[in-house]
Structure formats: C-alpha cells, structure tokens
Length: 148
Image 1 (cartoon, rainbow, N blue to C red):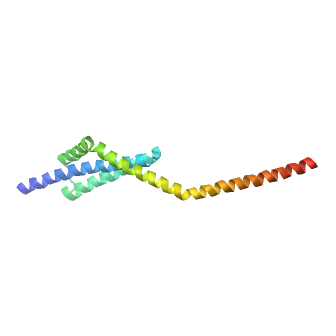
Image 2 (image 1 turned 180 degrees about the vertical axis):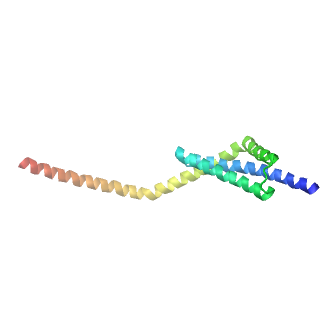
Image 3 (image 1 turned 135 degrees about the horizontal axis):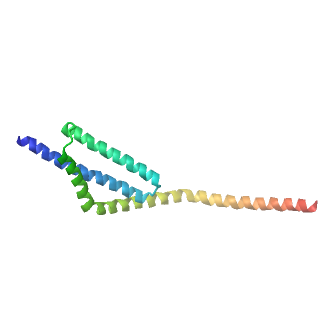
C-alpha cells in the first residue's frame, strides 16, 4: 500500500512539473514572437498547434503513467504547476528569452544588411547608369521630333 501512495505522489509531482514545463514552452513561443514579429494568422496557427501538442503531451503522460485513466488530482497538479510558473517565474523567464530572441533578430538583420549592402550599392549605380542612358535617348528622340 505504501508504494502505491508513493507512486501516486510521484505522479502528482511529475504532473506539477509538466504543467510548469508547458507554460515555460509557451513563454519561449511568446518571446520568439517578440523577437521576430509576424501576422495574426500565423500567431493563431502557432497557438493552435502549440496547445494541440501540449495536450498530446499530457495525454501521453496519462497513458504511460496511469494506463489512460484521468485522475482529478493529476489535472489539479497540472493546473497548479501552470499557475505556479505564471505567478512566480513567467515574467523573469519571458524577459530573458525576449532579450535573447531580440538580440538574435538584430544579429540576423545585421548579417543580411552586411550581405546585401554591396548588392544595394551595385543596384544604385546601375539605376543611375540606366537613367543617364534613358535621358540621352529621350533627348535624341526630342531632337528628331523637333527637326521634322
């Protein structure tokens, strides 16, 4: 009997940790969105798939640890783990990951600028050359039209 209670207590702690882990994953997704902003439809799709995978994760936990039986105290542990994380850890961790993804975003943007800058200068020179050539041709056409 004592080992059964210990196993159930361990399952409770595991569910608590998984609840906190689910919210940690969601905070990482939120921080990614802050670093790399994108449209509402993509955000909605990300949310949908994240929560589908989160509940698959929970289902697999029930299947593997409890033979698929849903226990109220395990759901309570999941929710308590989520609340614990949100109330005590979320702000700090979100700040850390937002800073990281913001830095990563700036680094990638800087790298693209560095790579594309020579191409941009070449395009500007080419544009000037084309404009000069077109102006010359327009003047020639005007002269021909005016002479006739």
